[in-house]
Amino acid sequence: MSQPPATPYGPPHDSPTPPQQPGQPQQGVGWTPPQQGFPPAQPGQPYGDPSLPAGPPPAKKSKVGKILLIVLSVVLVLCLGGVAAIWFTIKDDVGEVVDATKTRVTAPATLAGRPKNTDPQLQSAADLMVTEMKSTVQGESSTVGAFYGDPAKQDLIMIAAVSGLLSDPKKELDAFVTGLSTELAVTNMASVEPGPLGGEARCGDGKAEGLALGVCVWADRGSEGMVVMYFKSAEQAKAEFVTIRGQVEQRS
Image 1 (cartoon, one colour):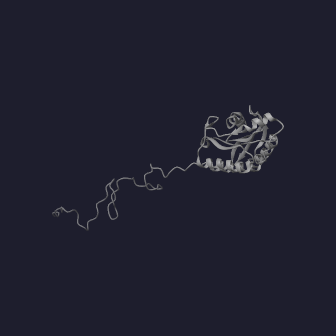
Image 2 (spheres, rainbow, N blue to C red):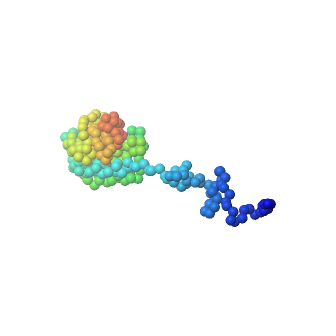
Image 3 (cartoon, rainbow, N blue to C red):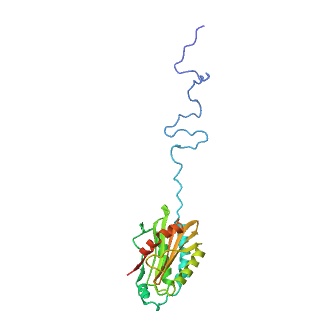
């Protein structure tokens, strides 16, 4: 029996679908060709290009907030401790009185090789220290509060000082140290070489807001001040104290 001729239009509608060849995509209802661009997601993998980052890297936490809290503690020391005492005219040693009246404290452009820090928050904190000293200390001739260095490099110094006539520098320093022990947990305050400007000086280890502090203070007949080295020890602060004090305290 002869076979019917092959139709040029393909198999009739009721003919079975030819078997799928290996490597060919499934045809039929709901099938769409693959899209160009991003590759299809794999099981367990989010959609999108896996080579692209999921989002911006997390920002590093700034230490400025902790530093500002420490400044507030220092302000309490300056206002309630030795610096808040009354300043008296000294009559027992004319030479010392003359030197004391010529003493001024200042913020140099650089401090022991470190540039002045102009961060707005730190500058505001420094201005607060100066304002509090001026409102509390009687008879001051000059005041200073400033920051130097870079906290991101764990190299930051804060200075706070006032000049005027002190009747009893040792007594003033004792009160100052007591305040530091309370507010900044400064311990092991030991006498150190005050340098050519004389008077008395001490350095100790402090810790506040989880930060290590190297703290040095001084008092003479014409000024009283402190140096706080963040992220440092008392030994490290002691090594630079005389240099730093000599750049902050000036006598004309």
